[in-house]
Image (cartoon, one colour):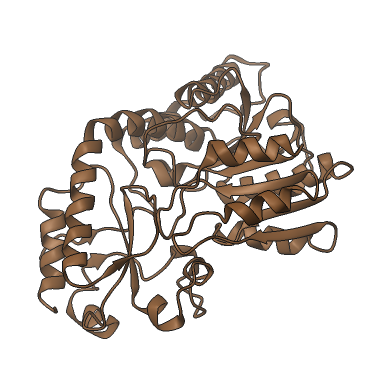
Length: 371
């Protein structure tokens, strides 16, 4: 097999040609400082960056409801939303919460803030969906900043975003949505009521090291580090022109390409799902995105057999990419009630755009060879 099979799109995506072209053009021509508006080169860069900012908002249908702060990625955005949101609203907030299955960064931010404000991990059911009864009781305690991972990075479980947002707002609270695994991986939905939203370009075929925090126009964020007054005074530092322009190009290209390939991707998802279920495997999670599938394998598909048989040329995950250096069991699957043995037998296969023809057939033939 000459070309490796890539099924780890939930970890990161390859740079699309539109983003690469935009970045090379920016490196060659848009090299001036965004803030140097006293000369033509700087003014051109300033215009191009602001155009990119507006195009991203328009692409996400949020131009009328939100403003956008560029960051280094979702990790920074999530920190900014929680720490900056806490600083801005600490007099009215009773607590900060996150789903027990949210990305590790959200859980670590809560841990860091726990000495300053009450923090809560919201339980989920065995399918990975939020425990509705617990959540409603939690909100009776007063306004909270609630983190919601729209699409889980390990299982692909999609939370009921609109319903949860409505409940939080009825309690006087604030919603931060981690949309990292959502953009370009499912049809766009109305997100205009979300208060804070984090995205990361490398999850939708853009460059690594660039992302954004989208902030509803009636909300505010306090900075968590200081410098000049870039990005509305929220995120200081000279903007990375080539990364921003690459991010904007990737988003536009990805949204179009996803809609063109959506039906085929859903078909391939079901081919994978049906194959593994026919072998006695169990799918971890309910109401999942059709690009991520977390599979609890039967014992005969041992990790040892997989690693010896084809893991060197088939890229998929035995857990979140952010967690693979951690020997502890997946906190996501643990929160869903799986035990250590079940977690050790669980793999994540994630699909993506522009996969070579017959990739799925080749993947399944690898598993068939050890079944």
